[in-house]
Image: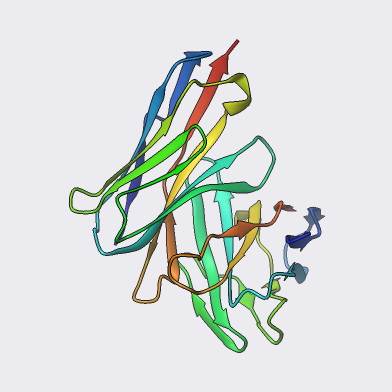
Length: 113
Length: 114
């Protein structure tokens, strides 16, 4: 059974810092991995999607990497801003057709002005 | 606007009273799925559908039913709700083409079963 773990569970940083969020998974037979952000009381917004054959994806100040063999993904946020405060979730899409998803527990990020 | 729409957004009901949470997407997505989010347990997949008339169980399907009669709609049915189904529910959809199957989520439906 696939298990997805995110460390740390919570993180508080001053504005402007570069930071790394970690996601690890137990079964390397994944279809893809997706990073989301969730604001309090809201739905999930997709940030980056990495296919199993890819090593990294970038969008603006965000960079996500994937190391399938070691079961790890990292989300790098450059020059953090207070607006980045949210919970960040990674989800592994598994199964022959990528039809099942397993989510990590999330990292709650607070960026202080 | 491309979106996934869930209704109702908030619902309080009583044990045993059947209810349906609707989910509709306007992006012509083949894949649709339901999740529940609980404190300390995170998001867990309930059911998913790869296309019309094709549905399958996720990790926590007990107590739920779904149907996919049309491509755009994927309702979640609780035939006899119980208090342990009190949760925040999300519907999501995506196309089913490798490299482009980014999941789009609805805003969520908060259900309380008394």
